[in-house]
Length: 167
Length: 154
Length: 191
Image (cartoon, rainbow over all chains, first blue to last red):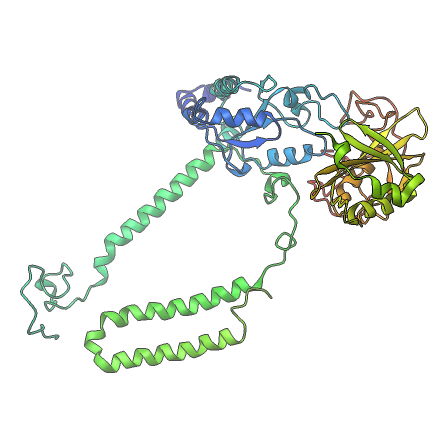
């Protein structure tokens, strides 16, 4: 990483672009509803009227092609793991993953032959929301943490502009 | 030159089609004869639209990450490998047949519009002529129907 | 509500007599023990007899009594919709466990028997499609047996599993049916 590249990347144009693009991305996070087990109920209730998620710009999308973030809510069995991975693969970038509930984080109470011990073993996870199940407020807190993570990230990473101006 | 109808009531709307052309262009009043130059604003608008769309897509392609790989490009089927006839590359030819029939009958419908506009000038002969045209196409439609082109299942 | 007074056991005793052992009233349900070769006949009799009419098969489950012998057991729970009676039929099996299938009597037995096969390795003879139903295709071992470790065996995706490999079953009945998994049904998922 040369000094010139840093200068370009830290220039007013790029940082402003980063700020604007990141603001757009974090204010309209569209999750793919991926409720597998009991945590799905809490995810649904977080999306309903009392603990409204819509005020964060969160609109649940049924298809991975239209979503930004995947909320893995529930126990992932080894039989189902390839499906989860395929759906993660079919999300367009930029994409993030929230592992909701202890089963998605580490297998939870199910340390058995049939349960994958954590979604992190096959998808990269950005935010872990512990709980069994986590309260809707906890899921909202997870979304806010993800928004802060996006705020600090570089929006143009992996783009054509970055390949021109980057290392 | 068409005569105005004798019993037409006086109305604030001028008779005939107003093309926005003045007599200086050498146009008989009441008759609409637009030259090519009148369509220039339309051309500008189309060019503007195309430019805006292309510019938006171009800027967007600079700003978005691009990372295609085989698993991402697979058709979406709830996380499974695509199964079924369409996935196996088998295309239903009924789609093509229906599309061709649609084009034919849509062109026929398209011909009805200018005919309807000038129906007053061409009178009864023109009226009957159009029905002859539609009858000929109806024969074709009957043939397609009886031959089973409209059947959906094989 | 006591089932004893409702369930009419007379036809069963009359038809089968000593072959079917009456286990009495336990856990709210009347139970019988039957040898495996008489299961289909008994089930058909219970279903079709006009006084009994056990037309609903609630459940078939397997049991592993290791280290007791005979090791395995199949338990059928039946329910009579017209009469509102429940009955349980238990069938002790040796090793390797084989019992005739009752899919000819109740079609729903198809999946219940697949579950018992998948979890215990109890072979149902005459079953039209005996393959795994819970575990993925290519999985080796029968998880609910007492000698199968809870955490499974160690492999690439299961670092907490027990050492060793499960005993391979030479007669594992997996047919070549396209399962449609993301890898086209390969043995190891997400490999």
